Amino acid sequence: MMKIINNTKNVILEEVIINIFERKVLKYFELIPNLDDEELEKSYNLYYQNKIAKTPNKTCIIFNKSFIIFKDAINYLDLFLQNEFENSNLIKLYSIVYIKIYLNYLTDFIINNFYQINNAKDIFDCINNLSNKYFSKVIKIYILKLVFHLINENFENFKTLDFEKYGIFFDKEFEFRSYKDEDNLLTYFLLPSNNKDFVKYNEIMK
Image 1 (cartoon, rainbow, N blue to C red):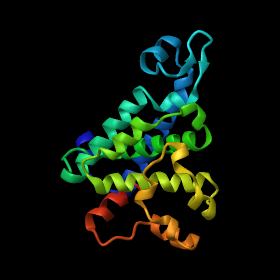
Image 2 (image 1 turned 90 degrees about the vertical axis):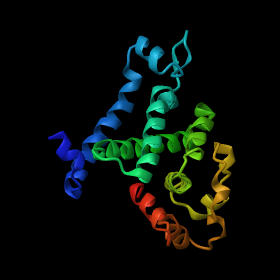
Image 3 (image 1 turned 135 degrees about the horizontal axis):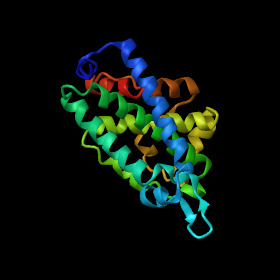
Image 4 (image 1 turned 90 degrees about the horizontal axis):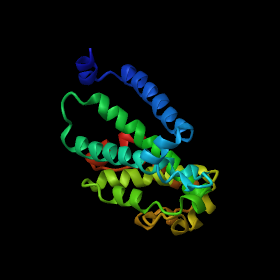
């Protein structure tokens, strides 16, 4: 049964599987603060800002074990997009789901709680170091889309946002500041491109 699912490309089935994975991954992040102290120390040792007073830093749910899973998922997907391994549909779908949810948490924390998260350099280094630069660019644009949403899709505020203040240093790789209206920006976020590979990588993060 597992082998059949792993090799079946059925849109409806994939949507069902994605929904299941989404619930699982969201529950994973939600349950981290409720873990016992021993497990928090073992797998999420950054969670307590002050280990004696047990003052939690909730932004740290994306570090330690969660960051390791993110690295594994994004590196796997990076390789998959170039090689398309057999019997790998489930892990591909899981990787997509985990990356998208992880990036949602990341952008929410850096925009709304940057004083707590403070430094996401390792995460952005992981994205920058992907072997496939097209895929890296798609991930970065996906992050910019999330940021745009978090600032209430205010076009002028987005254009003038001090991205470096939030630890985002790749915004200058893109030309959105030259656009005169929001429609152009949204069109850009749809990644029009003649490069077939670029379209293919974008499809996975739409």
